[in-house]
Length: 596
Image 1 (cartoon, rainbow, N blue to C red):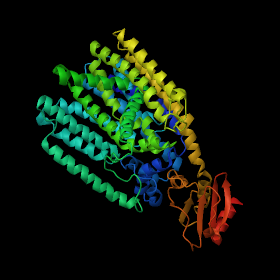
Image 2 (spheres, helix red, strand yellow):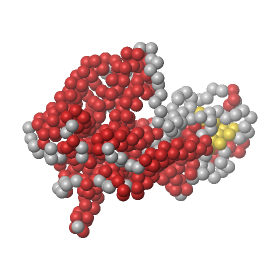
Image 3 (cartoon, rainbow, N blue to C red):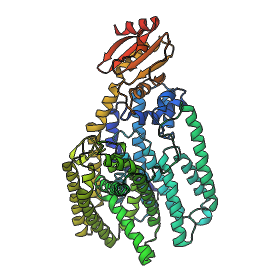
């Protein structure tokens, strides 16, 4: 037993470094920030806890949860440089991603009869490679990586609770309530975990007349959810001035069916679903879609043919993530379809909702748990494995051909949020017919390889598949970072680097004044004041022009400002896209002594 525990520990460490070593190499290359308003809003709670006032800037950024960034508050207390805090955010994401793989390994080691250590590590690597919300961004400074980790913990907890006698579940229910309470602070979509848990409880009751949790658990869950929402609203009242965009923490379905063309709205919802399935297939090398098909087959066998032999612990745990996936996908298709339909009907080159045609992150959060359970179910079931692979390969080929012929004409030559990794394309380019065709060809190629490999052989190929997926995912990360994310970081960093250096030089001579920042581009997001606030986190950045009548003031902009309010201001060009305006003899002396 002691030797087995030591072997498992070694395997866990190996698994962790296998899935994170490329991430740990990429993260120190990061420059703040990859997404101005998103990441500034994400990390703002840490600055708030450290006593810094970001309210005016965060009000223009929105709400992205507080549960992750609070962990970084001590580093603001220590006075670390902004770039180092940004790296720490990336390293935290890397750590959480690696811990997900470790949890998956522990599930395999504790709850299955898979004794082959290589296969255990291989399965953990395969499952972690399907975490699209984590693999979508190389320097994953997002709170969605925490959602992946929470999903892995819930997966472990479900195994424990399903294998535990009813009378001994109380302590695990309390732990699960604590996990749910925390996850509501991480992201709005975390409530899907609770909705899926309710659906799983209903399914378990109908199939076994057995309660997954005690009745008091549901009472406390409802009270807990609304209590956390009240606390978050109270917190939001401190960090915002007025009303911020994206401020609702509740998971609501907005966007009623009011599009002028009702049929087009329905068609766009179908397009979004098919697009998401196809993209999940390509980004997981087919593994994610095979898992979805596996559970569709099992549900059919159980409901239609009453083959209760398949109602195992693995099935119900996987069913939980299957429910979560369906709820998220349906919600995304419903919410975003109106804007996309209106954009298509008006011929708009770009609307925000076009990203629904290639946005793997949202529903991708729930794929790893489903993949793990599908692998465990078909591990020794050659018949079910071949059937799932064959059906998934044939169906994705049919879907791809239909998609290319019937769906692509609606979105052809639109500036879709499209990132065809395989063609190494930027996600801002127009997605023309050639680009869509290349994507479909790649997907059909994967389907044919899958079909030939598993239909002609009984081997599991777990070690080979793990190696291929590891190389593939790391290629995606490397390519996405150095051909897209890092270029974006350089662009955003250039918005405030010279101003940051100036403020660092004069910070000891000015008495913490309000620093005004104006963006002459009239953008609705990612304005330059987000970068100024992130880089100069101890200062109070105020978006917009200063009020009239201020005797001493400093204003930064990204161009020449033509306003009669600034007639008494002097200005100096700092670099190609940064200008500093100032008024008052004292500020003029300080700034000019540094710059002239």
